[in-house]
Amino acid sequence: MAEVLYGVKVWVDPEGGASYIDWLKGGHVAEVASAPGVTWAKLTELEEKAPDGWVGFLALYGFKSRAALETYQNSGLFHSFAPVYKQFDGLFRVERIIGKVVETHDR
Image (cartoon, rainbow, N blue to C red; front, side):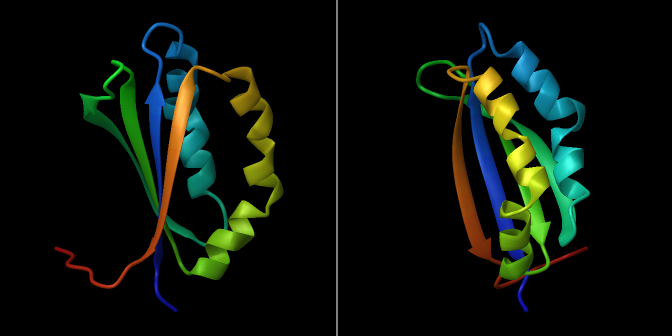
């Protein structure tokens, strides 16, 4: 089975989104990384800003397979984030990507 890349690009309101950023940096990515089937996780603060000035982050996760990603997306952990998303509603926007890794060059 091929590894699957799951990316979450997040745009955050620079005026009111500091608490959301703290949550993202303070453990959310590590929490997802602890899920079964996750092989690695990285959080990047983007240099570019959205056209409206919102700041960007990109969380990237490697999953062992598409089935492992789907298991995560149906898990209690995944659904446990819903109250946090509701708490910060209007302070962030999310774009998700999913793709099968077709080539890797490690050093």
